[in-house]
Length: 183
Image 1 (cartoon, rainbow, N blue to C red):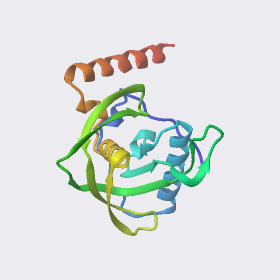
Image 2: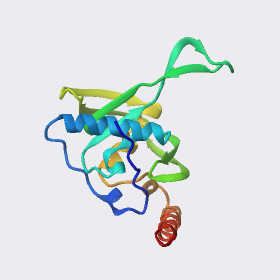
Image 3: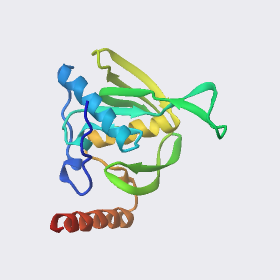
């Protein structure tokens, strides 16, 4: 398929709420492949359709899986891709227990901060075949899914930061966008 450009802050599309997918068509399947290609090219672990400018409730994630018993030259476990596609995902339960992960975002490049979110979630979605699913997630997977679903609702991980930090980040990216526009 093809790699698409990632929408970068302060682009106002990042603050819009995405529309549900009404029917899973070849166009939606192509969108999911383009999203995965774009996410891999940008070296991310998750991407929402809005991040490539498509206002649909589609999310992709890949938290590579370790291959049991296989190690690279440095003794680190080898991994293989494990792409996941979620159509119209929604969180239906959040744990009271919280966890903190250092989050980044392909739409806010080269910036990370620790964000506290529910440690476990239950969510439902449709597969690319249109089958309804319901799953629980914890750890990094729960964080990734929550982060990407936030994108579908026009929310960014910087919204979990203090107003001072958030405003500083927005100012930085707004200035960078203005410099790029005049270059």
